[in-house]
Amino acid sequence: MSDLTTLIYHATTWVLPALFAITFHEAAHGWVASKLGDDTARQAGRVSFNPLRHIDRFGTVILPGLLVLFHAPFIFGYAKPVPVDFRRLRQPKRDMVWVATAGPAINIALALACAFAVHGANRLPDFVAHWAVANLTNAFVLNVVLAVFNLLPLPPLDGGRILVGLLPPPWDRRLARTERWGMAILIGLLMLPPLIGMQFGVDLSVIGWLLGPVVDWLLRLIEAIAGFSA
Image (cartoon, rainbow, N blue to C red; front, side):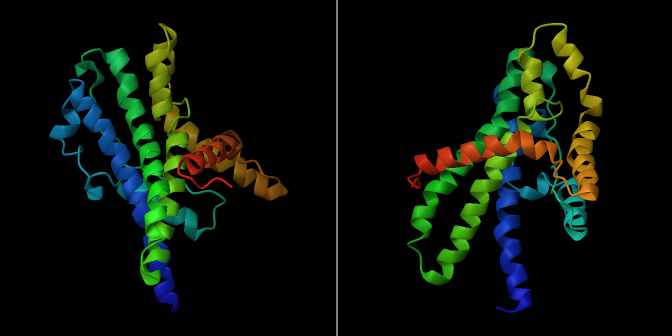
């Protein structure tokens, strides 16, 4: 393959799975919210499987591109958050948990679907099978990573909102107030320790330490369910 063909091949086998993972994740939040009484996301056109409705110009395109360009030891990005007015939910505290859980849940479902679909993709003609399997394999991994990452107990991530919904007063309000700094804290944890570690030849990927074992366990579990265990 030429360099351009190779670039296009690798781009499609990563970009397409990422777009589907993000799109389904965000649409799931809006769909569950609409079922529980808040149609804000539906009115904004965010209960949609059109990736363009969920892409954030900086978080989905520019930031990951810059990290790749500068050979960063991590990749991070995000989509436009789905608008949800929790006050309009029938039971705001309880339903917040269901809305937040919907995103990671759909990613796990997609990971399972991709793992099973590999069996069928392997039966396609050779010139299609390799590309299809690469897409499904990458989608499998990306969906698991996205699900686990979003379950970190830090607002505005889904795990933080789930925890806010489960905690009793006044702890729920105290955690909810951290949301204004949550993204800055998260980016700091993702960027600063690894960059500092690079200066001393030490792996200080704190998020990787926390999430790596969970991601590996979940990947192995889904592989076993799909019939790929050794």
